[in-house]
Length: 153
Image 1: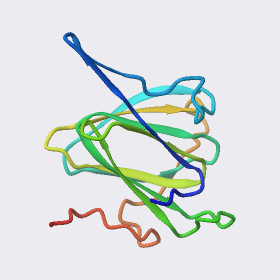
Image 2 (image 1 turned 30 degrees about the vertical axis):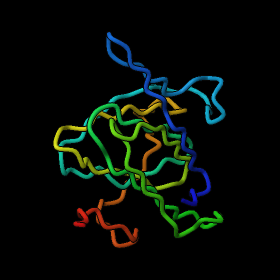
Image 3 (image 1 turned 30 degrees about the horizontal axis):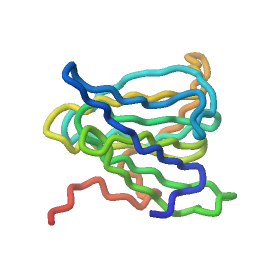
């Protein structure tokens, strides 16, 4: 897969033992570490789409800790070498990875598991309640060539 300009992926290693498992998600000495703003957790119910939004300042580092999501990223930046292109990732318990999303990229996801998906996002800027760095489009906005429907095989 050709990654969009500003998207990086870190495959994650699950370390199981008799007590459970451990996954290192993001470290300050990782190549993709861009700084720390805050960490938050969000959930998405099965079949629900949470999209589209972008940030002008912050990087997102998306990790799905429970369930599975289909993460979509679309490049609408005029000055980008990947303008008009998209990336798709299936991440979660069956495919643990961290996806870094640079500022200016529209992104969102759909919960594709039978159970609620639990997403942990580590961002480079704390949320500014007075002036949020968040710009939204409808999940089915015709300006983004993306189909959230399930694909039968």
